[in-house]
Image (tube, rainbow, N blue to C red; front, side, top):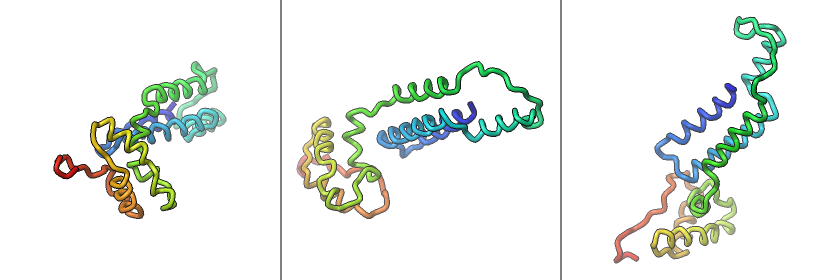
Length: 162
């Protein structure tokens, strides 16, 4: 159980950061689901220590003996995985925002040129704003190779600049 709590604590701290975007949150939740899925059928760090304690008859100086678990480990993990999946499924909004996050960009410049233009167009339409593919393309190509300096696409709300 401690292994699960450790993963959920890590997720919680990541989600509480001020600079966590919706795309980041989705990625963090998916990563946690992957870790929990892998740990569901394998022993976690604490579980290994407990099993060693059961074998020796002591855990942290306390005599212990093995009993039947009250909750099946795989069911417990699956329940948490299902709850995380239900709480934040990949939505259309996350899909539209992914091209603005450099973590998802293709490595090859030729693939990057047209990457995400459809999604950004949908997002702009959702916001009721005009967006040209050229603006997004220019921004992407200027950002390529730079450190992740932010997750925002600059936007000028002045109607005279549109």
